[in-house]
Image 1 (cartoon, one colour):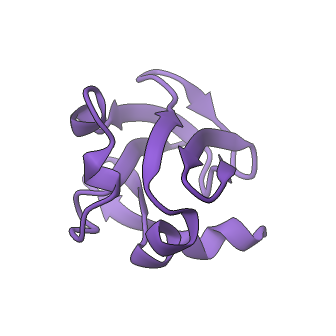
Image 2 (image 1 turned 30 degrees about the vertical axis):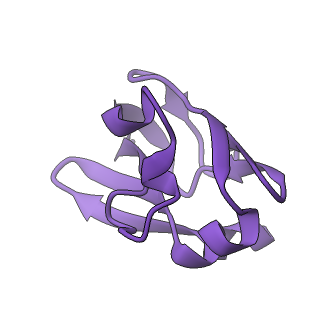
Length: 100
């Protein structure tokens, strides 16, 4: 697994796995300016690129920790990426994936 894994958390949800940014990830990347996210219905494969994050200190491709279908994208990220830069790590989520 890549170094990036420690920067992201996963949490079981009712229908799969939620993937988010850890405090350590926030510290390492700096302020997130942009994230290229998958869309609902996209199929993702464990180890393949899930999303890309552009931040102050780095541009990072994030591998998917699971295989499945994207069932939700954090609506807070539609207008800004502030949720990824705050202190509430529960709010700093990217997507939900229903595992195949």
